[in-house]
Length: 191
Ligand SMILES: [Zn+2]
Image (cartoon, rainbow, N blue to C red):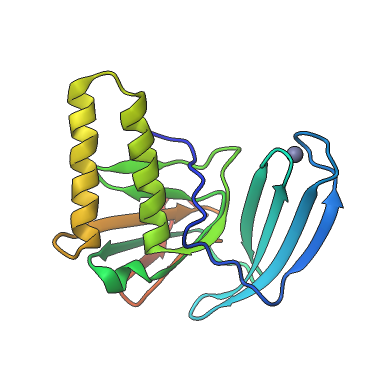
């Protein structure tokens, strides 16, 4: 499974310090209804992060990304999550990051990938949407059953009855899982 699902649910907008430029030309529909937003967010225990986004009110085109103010080394974060408290753990995911939940899903970076600041719950919501839409598109009953099983496994972790491992690998170093429970290592294959 790959691709990107749009989920705005628990996204961090860094409200207060954002610069917004409206009336810009949209690269998709060419209407002058594009809003450019640039914000600087301070992420405790990680650093300052720029959050860029483009949104068109005519065609709903949306693109966003994050970039650290100071450069970070290519990194891999791994964490086991379970229960309500873990859902609040801050996650910075750049458009270059791969998000993996072993034996459940791998979300590879794609051209249309967005970067965003969210939390574990936001990551899980995206994964659930992706699995949910794969069930709708699937005709094979066996595969549908497997996908429903994965959703159950994820929900058990959300309710604290099971653990879920989340891995984020980012060669740009612009991603992080901000928690004492997260294990950070140098990304293999990187310089
Ligand atoms: Zn547009």
